[in-house]
Image 1: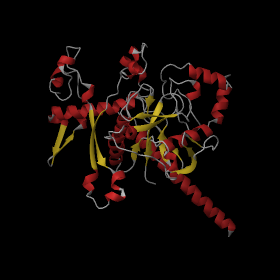
Image 2: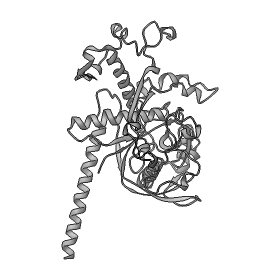
Image 3: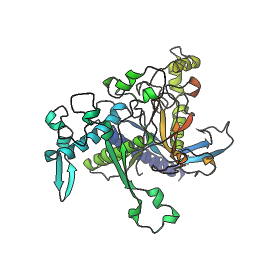
Image 4: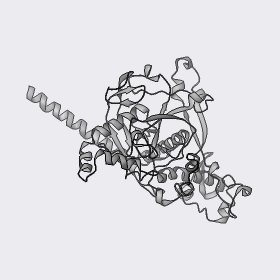
Length: 408
C-alpha cells in the first residue's frame, strides 16, 4: 500500500510540475514575442515561486539580523521581468500613443467605424509616414506650436503624447464604507503624458556636462537596450496599463485564450523577495566570475567607477537570471512610503497604497524606490537600498521593471 501511495504521490507531483512548466512556457511566449514595432530586446520574464520573506521597517531581507521591527510574510507566485524596461520597449508604448492620436486625426483608412463605435485600423496606423508633409499638416492635435519650434518643418510635440488610463478602482470599491454604492462611482479616467523627461540628465547634476545624454540617450539606437529613465511612477504605471491591454489581452484574444492577467509594478515586498532569491542562487555564477581573477573588492571598485547605465543584459546576473537589481538603475515599486508601515502591513502579500494619483498631500504621493543605481557609491549598490520619490518625479537614475500575474 505504501509503495502504491508513493507511486501515486510521485505521479501527482510530476503532473503538477508539467502543468506548471506548460503555464510558464505559455506566459513567456505571450510576452516574449517580438513585435514588428519593437526594434530591441523583447520583454522576458522569469517565474518566482510562492515563499516567505522577512520584511523590516528599513528594508526587506530573507535574514532576520539587524532589524528591530520584523515580520515574516508570505508572497504569492508571480512573474517578474528579467531586466528593467528598456528604451526600445518603452518607445513601443510612446509610438503606440503617437500613432493612436494620429489615426483619429487622419481618419479615413486609419480608423474603423462599426455600430457607432470608432476603432483604430492598425493595418495602416502602424505605418503612418511622419515624413510626408501632407500627413503632418493634418496632425493638428500632435504638432508643436510653430512659434516654439526650432525647425522649419512640422514637429511632434512630446507633451501631446497623452495616454488615457481608465478602469475600475477595486481598492476603493472594497472599502467597508463604500458598500452598496453604485459600481460606476469607482470608474476612473486619468490622462498621462508619457514621453520621458530627457532633460533629467542635466537637472540631476548641476555644474556637469551631460548634454549629450539628454540629446541621445532616448533617441539614439545606441541606447535602445539600455534601461529607460526619466519616467515618473505615473508614467511607469501607464506603461503597465498599456502592456496589459494592448499586449497581453490582445495576444490572448489572437490566440483565442481568455483575456486575463495583468502587468503592473512590483510591490516592495515582491521586489525584495525576487532579489533575495536571485542573490541566494547566484553562488555558482559568482564562483565562475571569481575564476577570471576578480575578487569581491575588485568588483566593488569597478562598480564604483561605473558612469551612466549599462545595457540591461550586460549588468550583473543572479541565480534566477534577473539582471541589474542592485546597481544599474533604481526601480519604482507600487508601494507607498509610510513611516511605521511595518506595524500594520498584512502578512499575506503585504503592500501599502496610501493616497491616490490626484492626492494633494506630498506624504500621500511618495512611492518606494528599490535598489542602487549607476550613480551610487559601492556601499549603496545593493538590493537592500531603499528610498522614496514623489510619484510625479523623474530622474536619470530611476527606471522600472514589471510584474505579471495570471490566474492559476
